[in-house]
Image (cartoon, rainbow, N blue to C red):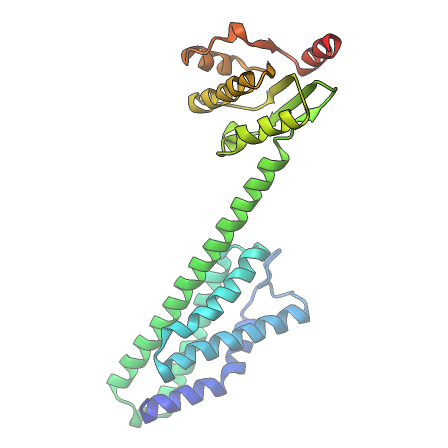
Length: 278
């Protein structure tokens, strides 16, 4: 590291707190955001510490030129922002705001040492620091996306687990109420879970209620009736309730013989009939 680059490094380190304060003062009131100007003093100090960490990480690139060192900050903070539910665009906005503040300090340094700084120095610093900022934002976005995707997947699996229970209503009769979009139930283990639950409950009849399903396409209809066929192989009779006209039409188009399937318009009618039979 040449002498002037070292001086720039030291100058920026000396102004870490000033830059953090300027950034904190630039905040506006944002509902339900960690960045909001009316955040508690604890949150504000937390942001200050994070900003110090961020700035020192960026400045360190001037010293060693290693962009690899910025990955730690990006991963740590992106994970926290994603888990907290802060929208990504808010973080990107504050990256932009702080970049402006940061380069104002670089300009201040250049003004102080204009006679000792060449155009080559300025171009070099501009390239190094902008590349560090860009890489930080790129990594932050990548890690945020990874955490967000993992949360969405976990939530979907949880919803799937919670929304596909076979409810036992007697020693031999159970009900499977499907709620929402059918494609939420087409994971590879959906049919297996249903059959295992029905088997564990020692059911002889399972009622699949579709009254809570707003729509269904050809592929989903086919998969649903494949489940019916598999239950039949286990010796479990299936009754379907709440079949909408479009579901019936799709089933007919697929060549599914509904005449062999016991159906009821309403769940309560099927429950009443099957409980009486059992």
